[in-house]
Every structure is written in C-alpha cells, then in structure tokens.
Length: 369
Image (cartoon, rainbow, N blue to C red):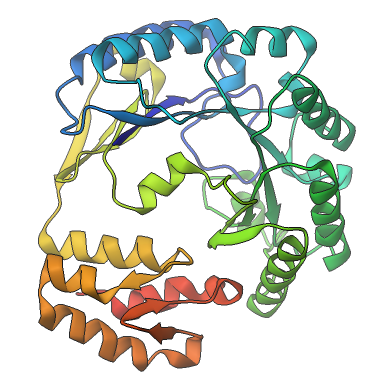
C-alpha cells in the first residue's frame, strides 16, 4: 500500500526556525492548488502500488486552504487510485486557524487525524519562534477539536532552546499529557543557515543548547511521556496504543509514496523525485529532479529508517535483500557500537528509545560507503 502527500507551501508568517518549503505570499495559493489537480493526473503512473493507505496534507500551513478544497483533492485522488482502504487522512493545522467555522467545514471532509503545530505552551518561547498563536489558543484548539469528535490528534513540540530551562520543557510535556491527545512529536531545535535563528546565530545572538543538555532533555521527554502512557516508537515520535502515525511510519518502512505540490518529494521503490519549490515556477511548468537508487542507497536507507525506530534493523531482512555477507558485516560493526547503547538480540540491531538521540552517529557508523 502507498501513501499520498499534498504539500501546501504557504504560511501567513515565517517561523524563526523553519527552513521547509514555504512562502508568505498567499496570492498564488488558489492557483497552486489548481495546478496540484493537474499534477495528480500527470503522475498517475508514478506509483507501482496503486492502493492508497494514507493521505497527508503538510506544509507550510494546510489549514489556510478551505477544507472543501482539500476534499476535492482527496476525491480526485480516489478517481485515480484505489482509496477504498485508506486508514488515515491527516491535515496539519495551526492552532489559530481553529474556530467553529473551520471545524464545521472540516467535519464534512474525510480527514480523521489532526496534526497541531503547537511547538510550545510557553508564550515567551512562542513569540521568540514567531508563531501566530499563543498558549491559550493552542489549548483551546485541542479542546474544540476534541469536542467536535476528533479522537486522533497529534501535537508538535520543539525543545533545545538554550535560554529556556528544563522546567519549560517539563511544563510543555505536562500540559500536553493533560490535554489527552493521542500522539506527540517532540523535535530538537536545529539552527539552519537560511532561517531567522540561523542569521541570529551567525551574528552571535542565538545558540541551540549543548549536546549534554540535549541528551538530558531527550531522556526527560522520553521518561515523562512514557509515564503518561505514550510509546516512544521513533526518535521524535510518541503514541498512545493504536495511534502511531501511519503515514510517517510508511516513510520509515520504505513504502511507496506520491508527493503532489511545489517542493513535494515522491518515491516509488526505485526512483526518488522532487518538484520545483517556488510556487510561481511550479505554476509556470512543473520541473522535477530525480535519482535512481543504487543497491548501496537502498541498503543505507534501510539502515537509517530502521535504526530510528524502536523495532530496529532485522539482520534476516538485510540478508534476504542484500546477502548474508552484508548482514554479517552489520552485526559485527553494530557489536563494536555497543558503547552507544546499541543492543543486538536474536539478530536484530536496535537502539533503546531513551538512547535514540545518538541514532545518527550509529547509523553513520553502519553505512556502506
């Protein structure tokens, strides 16, 4: 089964940390959505697997688009692919876009999962990040959606700010758990060069927190959310039983997916492609770049996605796909990485969830170069 991703690259305001494909000029939004319909038609042969399992609207800020327009994209996709088995349809929503009118319209769509970009319940931190909402709006948005019948809500949080103490992170976790959401994504702040934080860092005015504190915060988040009943199933993701993010999980398991929209990525098991990022260029004529994955690329991708998940990397799967010698190499090199917390049990290589912050280092050690 495959996933379908729609990228809405528009925002009313650019957050200080964000380096995603997003644009604050909304004048091209309606025309961009129209072109996405044409791209759906033109891409109908890209996927080998023509049965959709998940649909996801990401951005940017998909909640700037009228829910009826989102549904038209869903209905269009269902005329091209078999959508009868779709289990999860997610839309990313900004808290300040949630109001009675928006919810009423959203309830007429097939969206059954809401991803709320809250980031923090600390108003000082929200202002620093240049977010459009405050903590009151964030809490109200969750409760309004729950009252409307949405029982699959995920909250995004960001941690790793040097100027905010551990108590600020603890308070965010406590508030999140008290709200009774089903899923939490807790991302460590990354300071990218093209962002406001990146420019501030270049001037010596801003810095992310130290590695030592990052690890301490990571363990605290793991412990607090585990105590609240969440399973830590991927580096940055926590879910109550039965509420893992199915769309994102498909990325981590190597499933096919089609990305529609400016800046969207697609993968059909052999070819990875991505589209022009600028909406004006996208409207004028879609241009794709692509790469065909080599056997080494596929192996390294399996290593990367597997070791970011609690299940880890199964050496039997590696042996089946890439040969016994490759599996033996990985087991041997993983044993040498036990100082990073790597565990090998019954041929499966994994990193315990509370140590997953070091997963990138372990993954790099095991890559085939």
